[in-house]
Image (tube, rainbow, N blue to C red):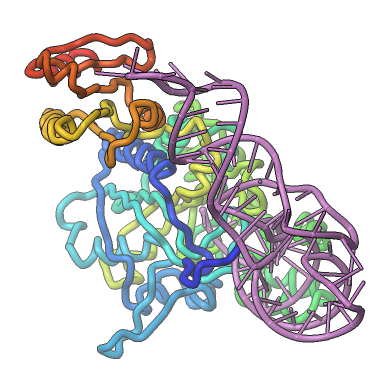
Length: 420
RNA sequence: GUGGGUGUAGCUCAGUGGUUAGAGCGCCGGGUUGUGGCCCCGGAGGUCGGGGGUUCAAAUCCCCUCACUCACCCCA
């Protein structure tokens, strides 16, 4: 096949109307459910100063060190296309003084993210996330409520076969001790694995626990576990979250080896995975980031959030995804020149009444127009021809019932509205 | 960045050295008065990803290149 000269760049894709219906369905469901939990939508820019992500996500993370779309703008500032939403939302939270408006702020955000990675199943360079964040409380009930909301959303999306994994990464006190113990262990155990692994162990030892290499699994299995390092506060926090999830009837699994790729996480972290996604099996990841707002120049403010990958979510939901119905409700078939003008006016009238209306353009035989009408998905076909014009009526065909009736021209809008 | 796989019609794919490259689906038209889905008939649509080489002859064999894809890595 001869390729067009101009194609979309690697790792991005077009969403066509047929698929868009599902995006709308997912977004609408998210807005509806999140509103029930008291969340308001925040829309933040898709680009920020590079420094925001460097400080927020962590210089040592792969995202910041090699996956960002960074460029210099005409004013000489270093700008980056957002690789995730949390840093931007924190920035907006501080900049707009949201901490002064309420003790707890619940925000969500939907939009594209950008990471320069090699594309594969479930991984694009521009992808979309549905993101929710809560600022201002360390109460484990906030963690639990957030997770309950997430699982309710995923459930109503029609996705099943999901596993919720939960862990506690420790706080300022116990996490460093764990990281040091793990690093020491890994330095010894991975000596023979080469420079690349050694560098990873130095940069971010927790990340090694995520490795899929079969040769690493035994080392990981024998590695020190975070649960042995938890202080009382961390242990109690996790226990409380678990108890509340049980009350809500949310199934979960504690995974003491669950880590996150972004530096800012602490305490509660979680991930929702599916077997049927391929290697990129996480449909949602999230956790607590109690130091982040302060790190970005705001007052000390605890926070917790999650991000759902929209492409992965829709892939999982498949046919069961709640699609927004955007098909025409009425299709107008017009025969003859005079009828074309009438069709134009009739379409305008129906649309002004809020009825989704499509018509056949460019004429064509009755048969071909009917075919197009059928394919449009409209439940009603309105026929305009010489016979109808002479009688001052419109023939209304009920496509699903294969029956047809004549309705007075001036009553047609009401007739359709009544029968829809 | 590192590996593996695949590139033939709009889509899914057959065709492994020999006339004008095929199928199914889709698209357009037709099956006599103005009626969709099913069926039947016809039609349009392809520089076989691109370049080079071997050969009398290449979609088919070899080399290069590009794209897509899967996996590592990373993560939503």
